[in-house]
Image 1 (tube, rainbow, N blue to C red):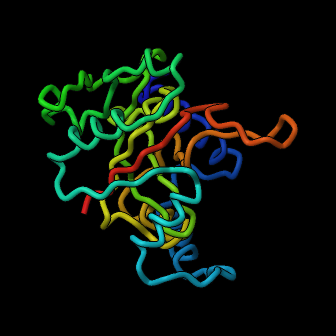
Image 2 (tube, one colour):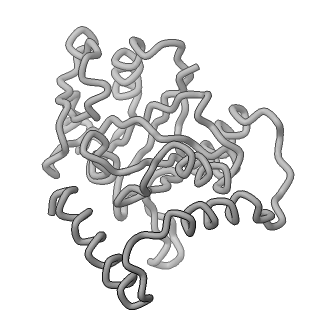
Length: 228
């Protein structure tokens, strides 16, 4: 289903709801009132945390088994990705399969991947790619979480299907908690995206004998490039 089809389906559902409520059209004032209520509504109890959101994010991302490297410019991304891939200590059976090929979001298409020895294509993953490179709408310091919004240029599968996920996070997009993350979405987007994904480290499960296994339902590893 395309984004246009999805939007049409949503509009049809909302139209039926309005009809049932005996409203002929969307009530603009209701949206204003709802936004005002959300802004004015008090947050529940929250743990105290450091005012240094960047340091807190790096600490909590590490707790979630993500790795983090700081870089100073977007142009440094290809070299940083190459360094990370070369540093991976994989079992012999997997090391032979390690690939410097992958996919990225379109915002990184113009970077010099070839010079870094990488073959990165700006396209959605087809499911067989080993490496996915994404940006992030924002990041949450309290939990070390990446926030991704789905869209034509930001396909969610790039972060979920490959074995290795590398995310570029801009330091000025780190917010304190989930409350601030959702407030940022409301402030910058007219409509909620089809999907909002919160990623806290590699995929994992403890279903079998309460033993944590990484890569159960997604990437085995998450590496974050923190762009100052």
